[in-house]
Length: 227
Image (cartoon, rainbow, N blue to C red):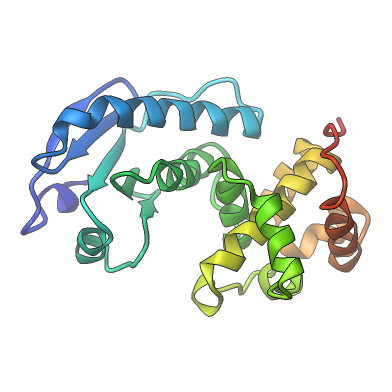
């Protein structure tokens, strides 16, 4: 944590709670109440989706708010609205983007509760948890012929830099949502731990069949999750 707090060119005002420590740059402290509200709501949403009843107050999670994408890029050398460092228990997001806060906090919470996972499923769960309508975005991709076949994304060697984020996150988020809602949380959690190569073992179907069923489901109302 200390490298971020002592980074040259950055100043933070940090205030702590039992689970989070909120760090703001000068000039943004007055709007911290909204960030605290969004953070607690995002934590509750992730716990609900993960089937967890609570989250321990240890380790303390640092929430760093940045003024702009440019400032985030200067700090972490990434061009995005958010980022997380689960090993350091630190979440970073650009002010005005609560969806990025929700996405990155999901990474932190699930890594702590469930352990690390292959990037495709971790990103899919985070995109799902961010509260965006990933199904509608996928329908738009299919309609515009911009859809990426799932094997391009669902594999242990997936690299986010190879594809546009406007395709990666809706597709992986919608697919993870589909698995949770139709096959149940227990099998999704097992897949989280075992990874891509266990898909047929966990679901009794290959990825190709699951992809066909998922795409067909986008034209149907959501159904309740199986036990």
